[in-house]
Amino acid sequence: MRMAQGLPDEMLMNSALIKKLAEEAKDSAVTQGVLMRLQETPNSSEVVSFAPFTLFPTPVPKAVFSQALAVQTHYNTLVDKISQDADFLQEALASTIAVDDFTARLFKIHQQILKEGRSQSIVLGLNRSDYMLDQRENDTPSLKQIEINTIAASFGGLSSRTPDVHRHILKMAGKLEESERILDNNPAAGLARAIAKAWELYGSEKAVVAFFVEDVQRNIFDQRFVEYELWKRNIHVIRLRFEDVFKAGSLDQDKRLFVDGKEVAVVYFRNGYMPDNYTSEQSWDARLLMERSRAVKCPDISTHLAGTKKVQQVLARPGVLERFFPDQPQAVQQIRATFAGLYTLDMGPEGDKTVSMALAAPERFVLKPQREGGGNNIYGSEICQVLEEVKESTERTAYILMDKIHPTPVRNYLMRQGSPLKISNCLSELGVFGAYVRQGKDMVTNECVGHLLRTKSSEHSDGGVAAGVAVLDNPLLF
Image (cartoon, rainbow, N blue to C red; front, side):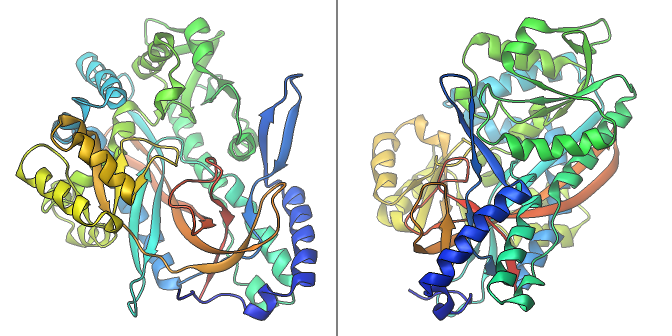
């Protein structure tokens, strides 16, 4: 197995040094606030641990890193334009909503909002576009998009704290030059800056920003860093759950949203992206109430739908990007350069061809359902099992097929609470955070606000940090 450029093997194999650095790394992570709340115990106390991370930063080519940052504002614009194009969303998602109940429920809310008319002209988008480096034998690595997350794009907070951890560890290891190549990174500030702008445009100093969250947060500190950036700006922040909105939420005659007597200017969704988040019809009623309100939603329901896997696949078809960038061929070129092969499973000859292609060589592809949160994708022989069951049924349209990306492994140590310290062959995924605010037809702000590197052992095919597979990392540019 060919390995990517990294730290010297003699250093990685020096067990005494590694043990010393690992202890220092844990202390540094705690000092820097790289923490997660793992669970609540039966007596309601909280178990807190450092978030998992790599002992050393991972080498990333400077050219592809710069490419990912440069294209982000175009992706922000693309997501926003898709969210405004009701005909495109209807066309793109027609086959999916016929068989996928969760997407269909979201789309039903979208249709109701269109029928009533949108109550708020301010749109806030906080997204994260995720990539891997595709490197076949002797080829230059190329940047290929895995997905774009338009709802609850996480780890902007913790990734703002990890650079100092790796700088410290490299200095301890005698790698001063490498430590100076760790980039400054503060997505939390950039995400908060966009939320603050939306709050300001809403126009009520007494109104609050509501972080919409799960009952039990395994990743609470990541959210808190963004929250604290808002408190620094004297913006009052509250935390809401579905139950809170259903029991204590209401709209006045102007469709202003009130919860427990507090007017809500911005609802920042860190929950509501998976079917399991909606535990009852009351949850769906609460989501609809928020969507109908004058509060700025991040994302609103249309932007949520713009991030589905089916939309991603449709965008890769010839001529589709030009629909959204009719006079910007350079933007089209930059976006299209990041696309991996994406294939429809819709009923008909094209979808039949995709099924045959996947069954003939399943190791070449990834089968993706319309789900977020990590750990949902299907690989290898399991692709055959799923497609053999649904290949003659419309149920297959709940999935898309994507080319499998082939990154080059790097040796590293994955630091987890309670896990043995051992060297692993690792693969990394680069995320780039985007933030934008639009008011009416005017784009008020459109920025790339930072990056995230996540790394996992090559033995795992899928899964993010919250799913317990990947860990936080930093790029070491070369």
